Length: 390
Image (cartoon, rainbow, N blue to C red; front, side, top):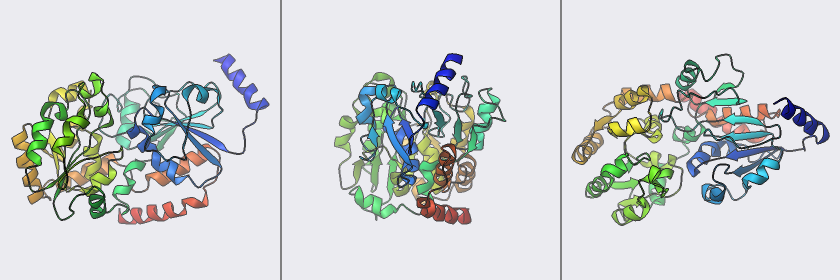
């Protein structure tokens, strides 16, 4: 480490940084990028910052991972990224690209479902320069687990930029449904299972969708990125797109494409899930949630017990296809049931929703030693409106 520090000091001295701050984004899946996309959009007009993206763990999937990202976002191979000087490295997962040159590393996290020890990591988090926490619960859990010191200068309570659009008025339910080719006058149910061979998709997905499409509803199915991965550990080895497409035909059925679930959440009158971050994100809309209870999934995904209880409190819990269909009809008929629990859980898990993107953009600028760009003015107005409503 001493040699590396010496080489970095030499590198800094011989080759001073250029006029633009280069920020490298690293993602494992398209959904990972969606967590950072609002920050990229917020700073797109700032010509002092140059964003690029890479896929350090699976370089051959670079273009697949970023296929929905703006065409202007430069794709860069992992090997080339390793040799480039970056001002900052931004990721929403525990990826760690090899970057020998001095780079500030920023963790934004992804999801709030408490899976895979994201809320109680056993590995140290002290090597990050900034940790953009989504909520105080995760921050407290990381400190309690010993992964992070309470006085760490890296800690920033930011919120979740991805869900700002659910509360800032930028999404129209009817417009989203029309774009999906669906009738806005019909109640809309969104089925969004998590990924796992033990997920509800693998266990009861097909008969559940067959039952839902028989109801007088719009049915949208949004697969997790990993459920479209043919490897058995993710999808159970099933080509779910091919399997489900014949069941979800217009005018009332839709197999959604793209990694961004937020517009679909805004369009749905009720959500069916098992244990996904989408289930918690949907609570910001205070609409009914039907939770498919699968103990094996909870064990396999190593879900923090607190999060199992939180989602159970804010939803109707069921296990069978028949019970899901009954709960869907009841939830649409009585949407205010569990409203107080939904609002309470949402307020606990999402720090100041509607204002997170602005906070993240400001924090990144501060890390890069840049003043706030005038292009953030519109975002500031939106954030101010959300703050007043809250």
